[in-house]
Image: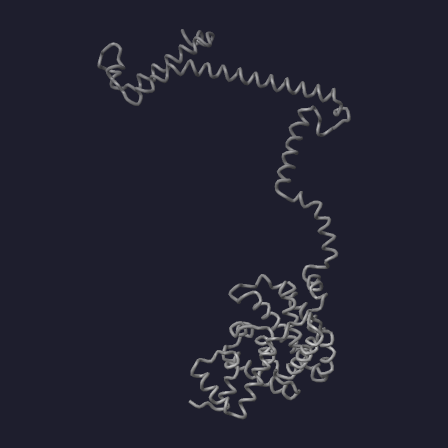
Length: 167
Length: 225
């Protein structure tokens, strides 16, 4: 359960950019999964794919619900505070480096469109295959590839503007 | 085949993911390596993708799992308390315990009437050893007497049947395979030989009458003229 919880939390956090929202949404995801577990069929793919699909639908619902609030509030206020709370088993210098990269990636993700953002998150941060992403997003494979491609290019340009250079 | 910058941009992810076939890869690299616009873009995207793949997942809040369990399965404290109480009764929910309980009830159902205890009006005196002994002794004698009577009745029935059987059994054989020459002691071939089944029945009735006459003399006197 903890493994799935971490995966769902990361997906929610990368999509919303807000740790508190991600935590609440993760709980909502598991609540929805618990209530609709009877509707799960193996034809939908593996359980992780189904879980990701449920998470993504909830995230889209959340995104549409909070769109108006975001127009007035900037996500930039929340971003720096979020990454300060991160903790992992790395050395301090690695932690700082990874934290900085994670922060910048998160910042750039928040600036690209939700369609491209979810495709890049699923592919590059969640490690899903194209076919799994196709199942989760319910769109043709060509569209999946196109979104991932455009998302990566936009992300690279944004990170370049932020001063992040690839190692 | 020479690719354009737009083609490079369109198929950049396929190149980064390593899913281009040999000819496409050759065309891609042929253009990208010599293009001042595309080369930095390819390097940048490939580097960012590699860095994102290397990013570890963020640790979820420590209380998240507890909160999820609380919202789906209910508060854990109550669950622990409930499971603690259930632990006492868990052995009783098993089928073998139910079988044991039923067998104990049946045993009591048999033993208590046998010990002379009245279900409807139980008295303290019923539990005295002397009363239990007397009731058990009485019940045992009653059971023995009933058994003895039953056995003697069975014996009479079997005795009557065994007297009837030697006369009837040998005659049932000709019933299946009629032998006209042996069925007539007088040697005549007329009348009864044409109907051996009727002859056998007549013999059966006559032998049964003899047995009944010997067993119940009074009845025979009344029947016989």
